[in-house]
Image (tube, rainbow, N blue to C red; front, side):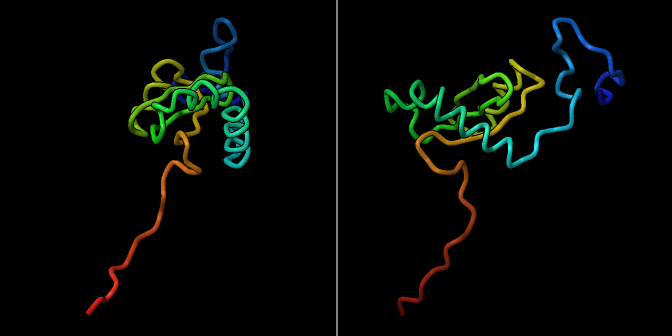
Length: 112
């Protein structure tokens, strides 16, 4: 077990929870993304995309518990999930989109 940075101990907490996040090494980023996408496809997509009213909203997925939070912005989704599950391993996605964010820029074209 790794020591919990918050509590400075390695003890197990009641119900086997509490500092479970620090009992093992953190998730590999690629593994976290793969697991979150798999959970979304198998368990969450039907609930979230069925009515179509969540299109473009953000969904934060906890890969350990399959729990999720939907919000209009990325910060709200992540913070909402962390309020309920402080030890969550969170992956952020966007409903109905291939990625949560787009990186890049556009250059103005010279139309002169």
